[in-house]
Length: 344
Ligand SMILES: NC(=O)c1ccc[n+]([C@@H]2O[C@H](COP(=O)([O-])OP(=O)(O)OC[C@H]3O[C@@H](n4cnc5c(N)ncnc54)[C@H](O)[C@@H]3O)[C@@H](O)[C@H]2O)c1
Image (cartoon, rainbow, N blue to C red; front, side, top):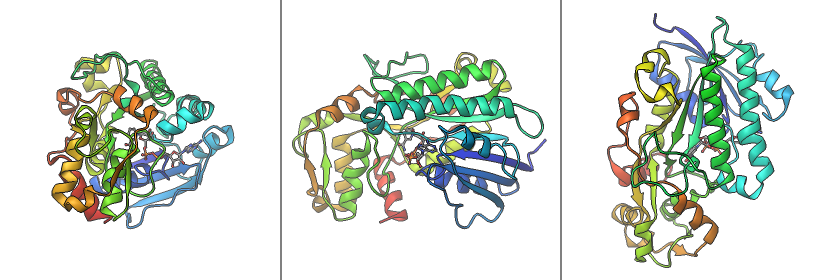
């Protein structure tokens, strides 16, 4: 039976992707009456121009039990779907280890517990979509990572995300929730101020020059340094990622039991593409010329370079594409053009 009404909780709804997700979901399914419970430690705003949906916006610190109670007892009722997108990004988790673990691990378990005992208005297990990251991988990796590749994170952020993925799989196995974890590529270019993510420079070396400002590249010594060819990043455009996130709530469990991997893990790497730092710089040159590239300054940062080099650079996409997820077709220049159309 087609869904006509759905209540969706989004944690981290004041963040970059979280703030755009409700609008993407409502636009993809105009015939569904959506109710959104948006929460963040900073009070989130209802997106403008989304007329076919109701919103409750809550300031909620998800490490506090009272906040957890509040998000599951709004006038909009129990959520059918919960997107767990709040978190402390990679550099932030490395610099404040205790906070990273408290939010990326402990509070994810707390929300899952609350979802387990809440269930939706029909008494069914809540559909959980948890956002994880390529940072859950590390160690000696094959050239192309597959869903079977073991995860050995090399930082607090990746460790917290991987534990979150295990929890989603385990809570699903027991029927407490109906979960899926989507590992996101690095989403680029990110607008605004640099985030506390180690990968923030990947956006910065494009965004700042597009805005006529200098940017720091923490790897290499110049735009022609061959070392830039060796630093590859698995990336995706925001619009493709938001579409994939919006779709993730409907990748339902039972038909997928025939898909081998979802029997053992509820984690899926979303499709992306590999780009190295030289290619990013050349894409910027193609779109905005030498002047923009000259604004990139090189200051080697050992911690940042070490973490970025530990991340996998290529994933097989056959499995996520078989589930229906989308892939970028227009490379890094497409990502730059999308940013310029929205922000520059
Ligand atoms: N953007 C990317 O490139 C990328 C890549 C991989 C994974 N992800 C994951 O996707 C999700 C969204 O990413 P984003 O870029 O929008 O992140 P973001 O940093 O912009 O948003 C995260 C939000 O979590 C909120 N938050 C932090 N602590 C909280 C707490 N105690 N209680 C409630 N809210 C709290 C923050 O206020 C922030 O608004 C995150 O889980 C992130 O780890 C993002």
